[in-house]
Image (cartoon, rainbow, N blue to C red; front, side, top):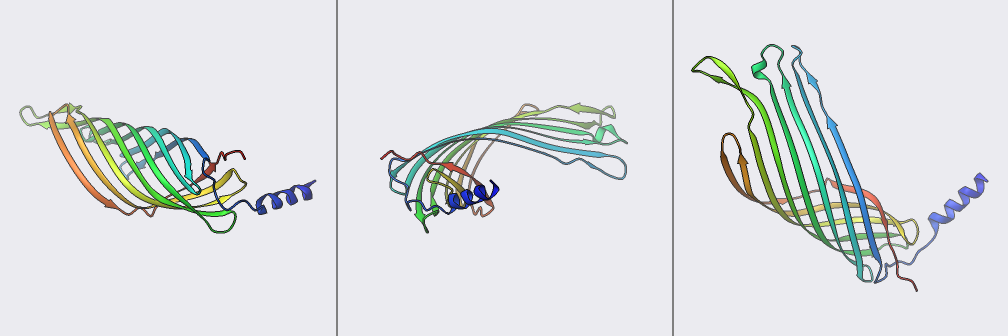
Length: 237
C-alpha cells in the first residue's frame, strides 16, 4: 500500500503538462491574513514598555488570460489594524505614556502578467502592477505635562485623525511549478516600485492643527517575497 502511494506521487509530480496557459483561462483567488506581534520589555528598575500590533484582512482577486500566457487581473484588499505602545514608570507616574492607533485601508490593484515556460512544468511570471491604496486612521494618546503655574502635572489625551492616498506602479517577477494542469506553486518578488503619496487630511483634536503632505519615492523592494498556490480554470475543449 505504501509503495503504491509513493509510486503514485512520483508519477503525479513527474507528469508533463502543456507548456502554455490558454487564452480564456480564469484565475479566481481569495485569501485571509492575520498577524500579531508583541514585545514586552522591562529594565533594571522594573519599568516596562509594552508594544503590540495586530492586523487582519481579506483579499479577493480575479484574472483572465486575454492571450495565451498573458493574463490581466485585478484584486481588492481590505485590512484593519490596531497597535498599542505603553510605558509604565514605577517611580513616577508622570512619565507614563499610552499610545493607541487604529487603521483601516483599502487597496485596488491591476496587473498584466506574462508567463514564459522553461520546460513543461516550470514558468517564469513577470509584468507591471498599478495600485491605488487608501488608508485612514485614528490615534489616541495619553501623557502628562507639567503646569508651572501651580506646580502640578495634568493628564493630556489628544486624538489625531489622518488619511492618505497612495498610487504606485511596480514591476514584479516570480516562478511557478505546476503540480497538475490546474494547480501551481508560486513564488513572487517585487523588485521595483514608484510610489506617489498624498495625505489630504491630518488633524489633531488637541491641540488643533492640520498638516498636508506630498511624497514621491522610488523604492527597490527585493525583500517583498511571498509564496502560495494558484488555481487555473482552463477552458473546456
